[in-house]
Length: 335
Length: 185
Image (cartoon, rainbow over all chains, first blue to last red; front, side, top):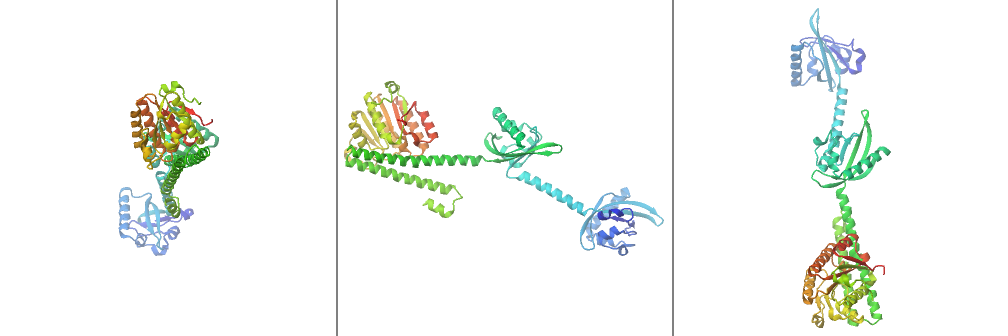
């Protein structure tokens, strides 16, 4: 049996160990010593080391069964992967390749083992990283679309599915989705031209807003950030979109609210001022009597009271709508 | 005398939106009523700004024959004096915010007059902003304008030019036939 460690590659030819078909170790090279921690003198002419290398009886039985099974069919095995336990308790992954050969002492098997623990770990790490990246892309709270220069979609994450209403299975590998998202040909042309221009100018753009039509016919405002990156000899365009419809609507509502507030506060105060000036003018010209003056002043006082009521309504609405207002200020506004 | 509306306009039962500056609302009101009266029209003044007693006095001082002037007073409110209450040419609404009562008063007054040569003057849309949201004002003006068209009667809405937001102004312009912009005068 021969054991070859990655870090003992230079000894491939010399470092080997042989074993009998019953598992008795006949050769145990230095790489085998280095990897397992067991010295040749401890293991040679014995098969006890296998129990140490595979301390879990059920796993050992599984491995033994597999080896027997393979050898029954092929008389050798290739790339058999096992996890062995070293002397210091560390588990290492080894790939085994064997050949049987005849010796004067009878049939022998040479097993060459390669320690792929680090490689395995690296593979797992890469797989995990890829999975993590895919998970991030899939579950990102932003629309993530990757396409080529022709507009064919290559990545379409869950957020895109959710907002646009089209599952990735209907979109990936196709480019007709844009006709659905931008059904108005004139608007689609305008958007396409602007994107092409921005891309050709700088290779990227930020906060470019478009209005898309979803599968159910509703309209959403998307803010896009996009960048072109080289990919396998070609290019890919990564587009990250944020659905800002609610924010835009909130902004419009705020503008509407402020406008309404201005109309119901500023304008009425102006009216009261003008009315008071008018009353002064009427008094100066003796056009109205004392009772009229009192009535007119009372009306203006009522108007002022009403404006105060409107202001209180406004304060209350602001306090209840904005979570950013500290509690003490909120209470003050609500009074 | 000012001539804001031609006889033809009134005969065609047009509905107008008069835009004026804040300081000239009362002055425009008197000028318009004077012009309407001179054209032989009765007028119904919906006032949300000046009490009818004061307006009536001012009309008289300006030579308007007030026998043809009717009032819907949403200013005086609940403090109506007994002698005022007896005046058949006035109906009171307790608040400009009470659009239902206001609508009833308009309907009843027009029934009472029963004259096609009648013009309604609404003074003013801007003062209504103290009492109502722009959405409700828009609805009310729409209601009154429709009522006038159904009854084949002219109407004039006065508003302070800078007191209305563009959206409300746009809405109001769709309810009327013509805008008379006096804000620069």
